[in-house]
Amino acid sequence: MGNRGAGPGEGPVVGPLQTPVPSDAERDVGSSEDSVLTVDFNEVRMGSGIGPEWRQTAGRENAVAVAAFPTAVNRSARLETLGGDQVETCQSLDPPISNLHLLSVDVLLPTDTATAVVSVGVGPGRPALRIDLATSGSTLTDGDTHVLADGEGVKARSWYRVEIPVEGTTTLWRVTPLDGSLVPLLESEVGTRALDSVGEVCLAASGASQDAVHFDNLRMSPSEGG
Image 1 (cartoon, helix red, strand yellow):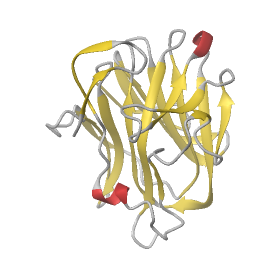
Image 2 (cartoon, rainbow, N blue to C red; image 1 turned 60 degrees about the vertical axis):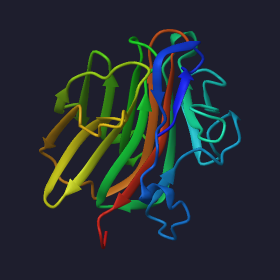
Image 3 (cartoon, one colour; image 1 turned 60 degrees about the horizontal axis):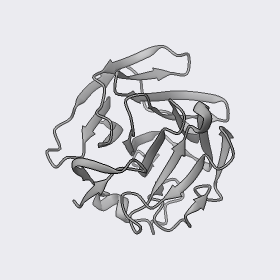
Image 4 (cartoon, rainbow, N blue to C red; image 1 turned 90 degrees about the horizontal axis):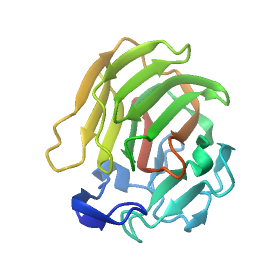
């Protein structure tokens, strides 16, 4: 892992800031499987938007962009709460991902006031699972806003890998700091089965004015034979 000495638009950082590194599977962006979604934003031109497949559904103009962070070659999606407005961008999946086996994304919060949100669902406006990540605490809810699991908050200005893996008959929710230790901050068994069909994924951020939440290494895949 590489280190970086400055946060996203916030001047010098005291101590190293870890760079998210994709797994071997995530590096295989040339996979021919249409039902596997892998996005690391490195090939997306920097500026407004994070790619033609994504549509901004909330927030001010230019609130969603690809940023040269952690580095110019290892880029990430930046969702900025301009004026304190919540911002969201979504991608429709065609064909949908059947029997979701893994949802994984790296997240960095810039301040203690920011919240990152990742949600997946059958289609637009129909979320089935939603992850809220904040320094005050983290929650996983279903489409009816019932809390499936909650846990400890994350530290601002540090990368975390957020995962929902299905291991055998067990669905887990795991949040792991990318600090080299690979020891999960939280890990909970979720009382829900794998999603039969995922037709949309959304990234969102809320917080104080100009909080810039970063997302990277998004991966979604079906179960074998899904």
